[in-house]
Image (tube, rainbow, N blue to C red; front, side, top):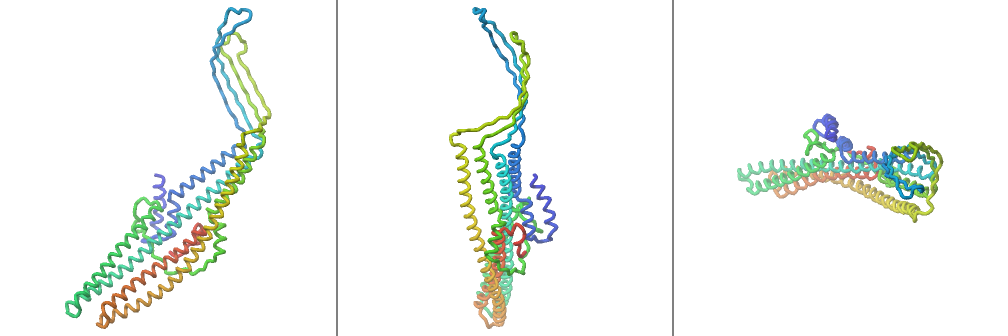
Length: 440
């Protein structure tokens, strides 16, 4: 129910922001506001903060209130009358208030507090990494929807072109100037374009369904006025440098920073484990009261006691438990160091791949655009020749097929270039700060 109301709070702003389209920025905003994984990580941060407060409580004294009630059945056998045993019974009430304040524990308390604070920071960084991955998923789905929409437009245009030629060839057939196979040819090509358009619409709906899931919207489909907008015609031509991108990633990637926070926490855990090898000194004090009721042989019915002092405890032998606790944490630190190096290599490899993909996609896009422009000129020329009775239907089919493929390739290469840049932004962590936003 709480998630439903959160969706309702952000949904009006999305509906008002765009009349008929949905931008990538709006999708990302909705994902970060509504996705359950984000709220899950927020709860984990709260849990880590609660652990920190538990650890800090060790700096405060512990005060304990205790009470007891006992019933005793006793008997006496006095030396003056060895032949007889005298039964007796009484009840005992007791209560006490005790305080214990740890003064020194080898600085283990301070180390545990610092370790818990680093774990809180690690929880925040893992939450940021969840956001990073969600933003990447939303971006990929949004681009897939845009690509499917572009394909639908291309295929619909191809279908309309073939339907037009189908009508023209039908008139020519009826006039006896072309065979009926020309009519069938354009009918077949129009049906193929229509069939491909149906599949492209399925791809579009699938991508939109994933967006609905990521944005945690109440319905299973996107509303009509929240459809993904078209791809921007203006493309960035930046040339990212490997060294700059890698350095930024190692400073800003939350999953990499989370390993550093965990390392700092383990360092403090080592100090805490070593502190457990030291003696513990505490300030203790308390008040106790005992009262006996129904005692026939004792005149003392109430007893007050109070005490205050310093207590020390030093475990001289624990079977190796404490020293092996130190070894355990040191081994975890070595394993974490290997994990950090593995992630560093993975980040470096990912950034290099994304840079290569972006450079390749941009080069492909510029060439596909030229191919499309030339294909359009060729198709228009052949179409005029065909209508004039000079070019054959086979030639017209070839150039129309080339144009359809070229137009689809331009749309695909444009989106692939944008997606390559956005994958790079996700690999470096820029996507979290909006510095990697490109296109629509």
